Length: 248
Image 1 (spheres, rainbow, N blue to C red):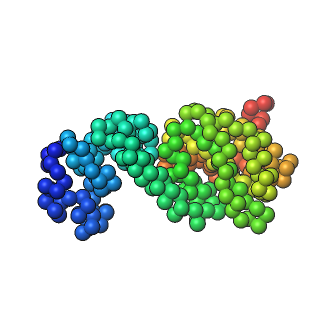
Image 2: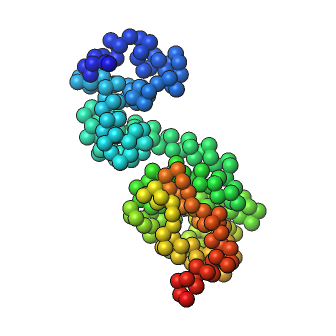
Image 3: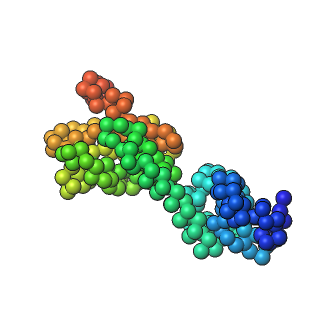
């Protein structure tokens, strides 16, 4: 156990986070040691390792314990940790965002429009930590090429603000012939709400009229997803049975 005021240089060389990483690789470091390398310096009261432990202790009392807290802490919350100023707060937020982008980049080559899991994998790190609902459209051209994704709307904690008009304006501008909707549930459960079902039904029918097909609607939870396509929602019998249940 290291003393808070102990300087990193006073710690045996083979136990210092930086030197340990250089010798054994980053996988040999604990969470607090990894953070200490990022933070680089501490304060008069705490060395970098002690400061990292303080940050993780604060994280463990939050709704998102551990390193995932870096994706949720605001700049103000980070600056409230003694020893974390503007520069260190920016560094930590950038580390969190970098990890998210790396995960998305690794998943992107595997995206196929007829494989809901590949799409869910791509959006998982982007969306599962968000505290508001975000709705994306992933579009393709007539040859099945990926035209990219577009953020359609951002909502409150418990709902997005979106309309079919906004969805199809973007699809028409990009000359898409098909698309997949993807949005997240901050609660962590990907089970669709009645609003989700109604939006899916409305967009699907509008797409048939415009000849721009809704291929799927995927809801991202915490390491889980729900695919309307996989659940057979677009099968004619199930689709119209859902309408009859509502209006019959």
